[in-house]
Image (tube, rainbow, N blue to C red; front, side, top):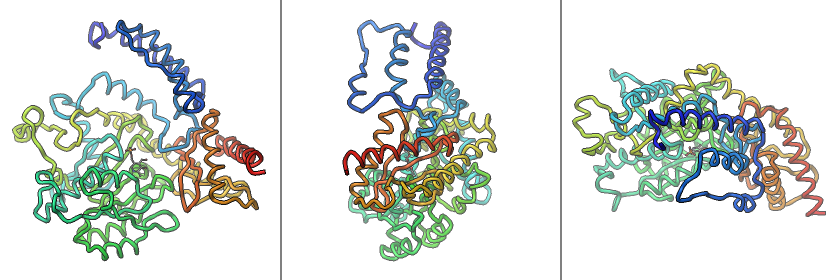
Length: 489
Ligand SMILES: Cc1ncc(COP(=O)(O)O)c(C=O)c1O
């Protein structure tokens, strides 16, 4: 009665139809978020767990009333806080298939067709990055789907760590790091905080991460990188992490130049392209990723600017032989005999054991949209950001922090000729961002840049055009002025 199978398939279809209709109603309401302030929302939510259970109609009724209105709707054009996009409907359809078939990517006998689809897609992605998919002359690229950017960055640093200590004759996987010299990780001061988190997880400690200064665009400063390598000695650098699309500014580190330096010094180069990797599909902006092919490993993240439902990411490595350092066979799942028999068990390449078939979302999205339409959706975000930045720059109520690079716009409310301290402006701008969401008007982020608390639009939604965002900009100014009248006059 409860297990999904032949006998219950009609219940599943009926409940799915009911659920789809409910989601349609939620989308049609075009509401951003109705939950109000955090404490008020917490008080409204209850779990219903009983001995006897409830009918699905009642449960769905509660979801419609209690959960959906209090979600933040990523479909809304005013939902522009984070790298948290509206999703492609084909991605949602793929989710139904992923969930219903419940394949597990760890072993071939739990995901026979899915394993080959994922492998093929990894090779396609590698080719888009300029990696090699043939074994003939150069190393063959490899990779695996991941839960997202953090895990992909962890894998890049894990393989870099194993190669670095391997060259010192140490098998870290078996013997750990005790007593070993500290390998340094270099990344820009704008790199994602998962670099430090991952350094800690890898037993290197957050202090192994050395931050390289950035230029005015937020990209890694080459002179400082080279000086830092000289200062520590190239033989002591475990990896350089370059970012293609920093989280706030969308800055892209100079990949060619960094690759040149890393290659000459024999340093592993990982490119965190969690955001900027989407430009691989862009006809117009793809050149911004020039040099990515020279990376040793790459992070791609499809639940960001590829518009796929969470979670969906990939880790790519130029030479799949590097996976040998994490190969661990278990008798029940990926026995070494399977390798002899050419049976691929992807657990050998993953940090996860049980793993979803998230690759299907990307495979189906590419199939339905084609790369042209997909690329155009990505381009729209970059174009909208330029229009909106120009609008803000010409408005005396705002300071535009930097011209946009990808599709984020950093700015803050600071009426011209008013002389507020950075601290007072921070208070005002924080108040603005919080009130927009609580009042169901917009979801925008705050972040720090150059000593200022900034407001941030992250414009992934192609519908977040200048026309769509103009009322939000007007509301920001109205909230800002009202706050000034209330608290500063
Ligand atoms: C540049 C960058 N790298 C990595 C990540 C982490 O990705 P995820 O949230 O998928 O783990 C993010 C998240 O915003 C990011 O912006």
